[in-house]
Length: 213
Image (tube, rainbow, N blue to C red):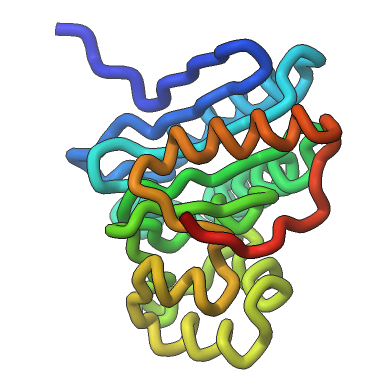
């Protein structure tokens, strides 16, 4: 029996949709997944015909970040390489010519949140929840979240969120500026947002004013 794809990619017109496809494993960003995602992102960002890239998950999971068991087995050399791969990949997302949108459909945890933070725009479903559990595990994210989160929601809120490892829901995330909108069908909303940006000016936005439907 063939193994189900870890990542599903669909390009429709000028919009690309990347979907993490391991919900039974909570869509981990393992080293193999990062390698595959790096190839997909590199290919899409090089395409002149793609103007928007949307990231989403499957079932009730967006992405859960690094596989903790895998991290425990890495020696220092491979741990450094894993961290650098994530940093390079997420910086490529942050610096992409295309508009990048995180369509957060459910649990968004650790490195999954770092990925969302690297996107230009973050929208979520009403049932989405967010957490950075690193401090409780005695580790810290190495993929840019400690830098991007304070720029987005402020230093004090970021410290509280990261150090307490508390959960926040979509409404709380919206109120503190982590999200720009909450939608029942988050992928459809992301596609509509991408089309609206392209229709208005075709430019990559520096920021999107918070709004909610």
